[in-house]
Image (cartoon, rainbow over all chains, first blue to last red; front, side, top):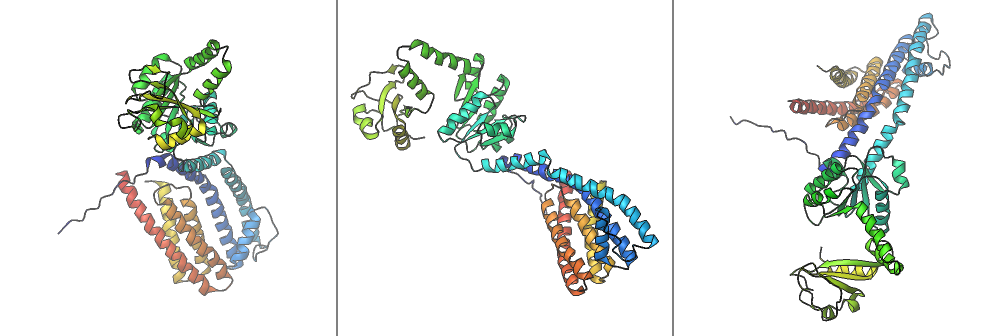
Length: 368
Length: 112
């Protein structure tokens, strides 16, 4: 006789929903606090109703009413038949002594459960995670300080959505004041928080870690989930020794914060007589809102630009942008570009022009 | 042996059995006990976050929403209407017990 085998497979939750399920479970479990007060109330109503039904000979509606007005301290009187007898009054006395305590305790606990900060905050987090699910092509930022605040401000000016992974102690009010629309409270190198921040659908990640160990952990965790080069990881560090290590484990670009500040200050020191131009270039380089943009375009062997002259491409007439320099494959930067300058495979074109023209060129000609 | 499990399983079954006993013999005391047994079973399902907890709570709420009007209708004198509502509650209670058996089996396999 053939044997029937039943196999039970473990229910799998999508990785992006792990944190959401955790919060939902927490919310449901916090409602368990309602069980004891509700049971006490249920029991008091049952005992009171059955008792008065016994005295009145089965008058349920009045017995229930009498129980409620007794334990609810309303006390309209002895409205049910039999409750004005000696036995009825003894029953009412004990029901009131016991039931009033139960009623007031239960109501207090029920009200407290619904107004508990923890429940409200968990509910808000569930709403937030559901909202993050709809994001595509966003940037995730880990860490919370002034740099993160400025970064969110700059990215939002460019209509780029951001999700910030912040420590548990950062309040919702603080995030709201800083203009943060999407956030996840948690540890940035833990998979459940990375998936909850929508790492699979994100365009890039900015690591603004509080220490070196965290920076290493975050960059490696993010690169394991998104090994594709298209996904960019930017790391901001304060330790020069860490820069090379972060590149080795997959960071696209590592920025030493002290060095950046010093070099920006240096540009002002070195160009005192042309400070206005220097300032504009500075702001363009730092993607601030000046109406002009700069683009670096790598030309590979399959590119339609490879082997052609700048005159042949005629980018100025077609898009209103200019090639201001070429970084050759050997690392040399050629700034004296002319119409007859030939573009070779491996070169990087430095393109400059009005922001909207650069955007149009990027959309039409740049393959991602 | 888990005391909470015994307590909640007792009331889930009690909700079904008292429901059946009221349908066999529609007596005032029977319907009062049925309603309170059902309410207790519902309260015990609040705050559970197991696989079928939502379904279990939903079936209990359905039974309550049949039985609470039924008890008032019964004491207002319309026994037939109360009994028909109690049949609706019985259907919900049967589904509830089926879910509860499934969850117990899943729990047993998960624990192993």
